[in-house]
Amino acid sequence: MMYYVYILTNKTKTVLYTGVTNNLKRRIYEHKNKLIDGFTKRYNVDRLVYYETTSDAKSAIMREKQIKNLLRRKKEDLINTMNPNWDDLMQ
Image (cartoon, rainbow, N blue to C red; front, side, top):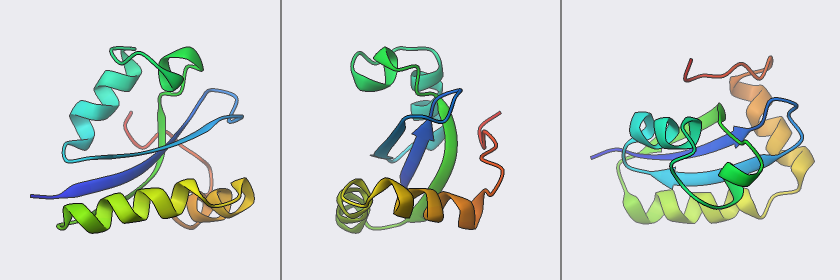
């Protein structure tokens, strides 16, 4: 099984959200359709701009926590390595 650590943003790219899942397509669908109450629904965070994969659940959770603790500038640097235009990778 694959695990995904991902970063989402909103339309104006002012908010960043980091999460982890074992089904990226389903999870992004849930965010885009506002099926999950909380931060992402409240701030319209539904654009996938970065993700990593691993086959180990524990390392995925550890990586999610590591990314969440980064300064915004470092998160932006991470996004820019994969997606310099900040395109929605799940269009």
